[in-house]
Image (cartoon, rainbow, N blue to C red):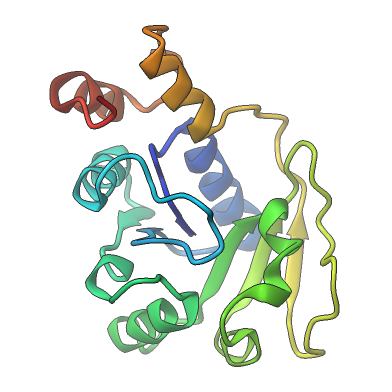
Length: 188
């Protein structure tokens, strides 16, 4: 499961848990992106802060793990490069890429989507305000498993706005992430 995780929040963890249960996955790796080439702006928190928040969010959860694979690669972050690295680390595993419906709409724009789709299958969760269908033609071998998401209206951008305006974000975040933000203040 790739993403900016700026910050990682309860919605991310719920989607991962739903993926494990719905698709019988053994493990979900949370992979913070160095810099998404399809996002206009860079992440607000540094990659070190985002990885540490992700690591803390999944710590002690046996079927969740944080991976720094994308952070070890150069910018921009291309999923194809991350998947190749993950394949080297998990050679005996079949890989899926979990994403939200907002990303399905622009999947045709992903770098080397033809090759990426030969290495992974996608698991797409519905998201409020987005449909789970590609806006453009994709190569015929792209496999997208669709799954309904829970109606959880939590976003990292709302959490950052709450933190900047002095409003509480405690109940949007895993406890260890909230504690980290309070002590390290990555959003100052």
